[in-house]
Amino acid sequence: MDVHGVYFIWLGLSLQFLMSMSLAQRVLLTWIFSLVFLIMLVLKLDDKIHWNWFLVFLPIWTFDTILLLMLIVKMAGRCKPGFDPRNAADNLKKRVWYLVAILLKLAFSLLLCARLERLTDIWLSFICIPLWALLIGAMVELGYNVFHF
Amino acid sequence: MLFSLRELVQWLGFATFELFLHLAALLVFSIFVALRVDLLTTVSWWLVFVPLFAADGLSTYFTAIVSIRLYQEGEERLAVLRLLWVLTVLSLKLVCEVLLCQKLADYEQTRDPLYGLIVSPLFVLLQLLMIRACRVN
Image 1 (cartoon, chains in turn red, green):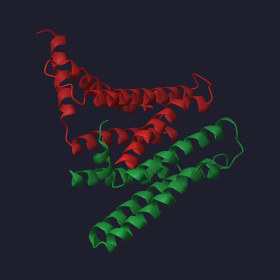
Image 2: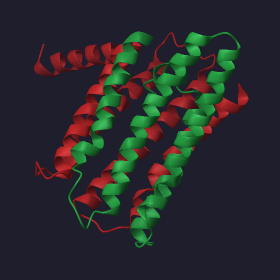
Image 3: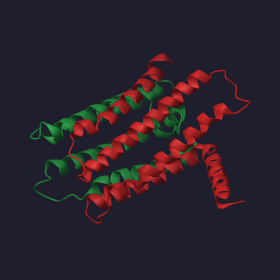
Image 4: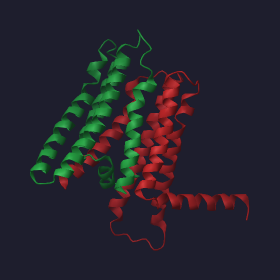
């Protein structure tokens, strides 16, 4: 087996592990990335380190990539031969929304980093548009849960 | 996405309505921040932070009512635990917000307090959330 084969098997196993995690393990994953990001953010803001902003946001990129991979693998599960199409439409809608949400979050973080690095000089209001779309979407989903059940 | 709504409510200890309230406050706050930075550069930062303070106040009020109802229905232990947890989280969040607001308001005059100090309530909050996650599980 060549190196690529081993790499794909390793990737598949890690994704399988990620998707079968218990609540505590998922919390731990979120917790570690939040903690590392907060520490790096504080160090950068207090001028203790002079890293690029894109590097400071590395935990965010990693976390988003993991979420994106998990979502894509779950969506690809629809193509399996034994897939049960009942309730599939609702599930698909939800997953597409999650995908859009992650992409919106990524767009916001990328634009923010670009502005902080002075690569661009666009208004903060334009940078915040993906964030607002994300927040409004999350509120609609939460509001649906609050007022319909 | 990573967590279902039920898991989030269990883990964070907030009702769905409270989560909705905080999200709404965050949305209004981000709009205010964008406006403050782009257009109204002379407006006080304390005004910009009003939505977050209001959400904290409303959340405290809501929690007090829920706890009183729980107490009346004989669930004393649950009422006290819920009240203590939510008040701890909200007070840590409030301390962080007030310090950040003060820092932004006096940014030109002084370098104190350092961002490390401002974020320290969030570090405490993260530890508490981790402990709670182990209990919930």
